[in-house]
Image (cartoon, rainbow, N blue to C red; front, top):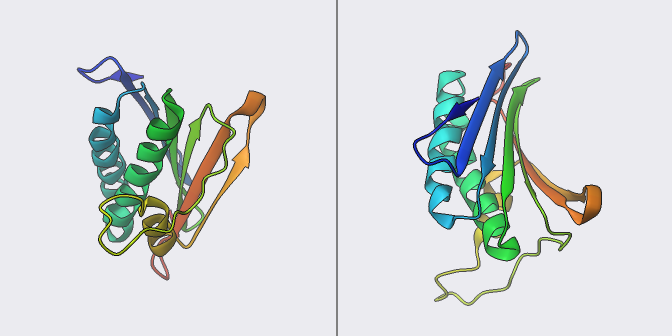
Length: 147
């Protein structure tokens, strides 16, 4: 496990012949969202998934922002690249269902899940143990590419 200069964010990575994986634990600190975005982008670039790195970085940023904003607690991020797609999961300690908000055209906030829906091929959520939940999103690699 590698620890960044900020002890509130830890990262671990692995790669096998068919699966790449990045795991990040995030302390309850919204300032870490940018670091998660950079880590997700860097991992995908290093795995040769350049075409989706920017979009998945935005998706990660939105899902992590929501997890930290609405739960006030820690979150865990898992990014996997396998079988021709990247899947990002963000787990937090709340059982509250994520919901898209209707916002006015002049609103400066409230479009996070709309961005996730626009960028991801699929997204959803599931309840986890003891009231936690995981929100996930996936993006396919371009045609003909595998992990």
